[in-house]
Image (cartoon, rainbow, N blue to C red):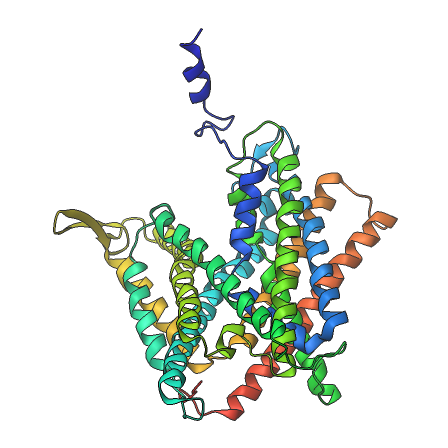
Length: 460
């Protein structure tokens, strides 16, 4: 009898792959790890634009929408039946199964545009943190009256050079160590930033706040509110990896039931963390809340440097986690168009010491060009809050709201023009409006920032 137990454990899953062992706890942990990113540090700025009532209301509302729509996505992991159907391994695959080829292409364009854009956002974030470290050291050594302004360009170029080397890693599966380190450091800088804000509030040095946020002319206020909603939307989004998380879950109980529970646990924890970070940041800085709360501190300089160092470490890993799927889809497309090209398909072995590495000429050229272009684009518009808002706007409406609702309608065959159909389509339209307004606000903010600085001359 003892001899049969290992055989049962080694049986493959229903799709022939290695048996999955994930559960609600591991899935919840993955969700929290994914959403705890650089976008969290911008939430305090978003709260300052919205004020206490609208700020808290937006975070809670966006989180509630996320719980609902991600539960719909969980039901679409299998097709056509949510329990016994065939697995969809990616978000795009699920869209194709339920909504057809046209929606599949549209989803791919949005998803990969966002992934490519995020690499620009991460380059900006890392350079902002590198400059913040230099400023903290400068103020510590020369005093608060010193002029400590530095260009972001050298930091961006250095970060880009590092990413050129890291991007030559052939595939996503070889990035586990980098992804793990990035996840650990993400919690480090969030807690350091929140702790520094808490210390300011407890010391009685917090700034004045209001229920309506910053005092600005109506037009400027409205555009800042739109940008703030984009920042919150970015922080709430993990649609691009939800099926990667579901693909780790064991089959019993059903994956969709486990994922729904994990969504509730993960998003609830996420919401509490978001409210703490945004609330403490706004209470500490008031109307002058910076886009990244860690850049608002210079002392204790060692802790500020540590927090920003954690951001940089996270950005190094997150850049590849987000960039590798984009690299892979382009390389797969090139392989399909030119299947017999040695430039595109041939792997060359290379000995580096005692380690054998393999490199590909197309991968070397294409990925290097992409990183260079992303770095140049970041140098052209190094505006933290506005760029993150734009990325959030691109993804929230389509990926978090529209596609999940349309897949749900197709799966459940909900009668057109019924009350339920109208309610779902109303929510879909609401997501679209949020995305459009956030795009308008962020683009307007980027244009305004362009007028305030010369090209490639931005200093922080």
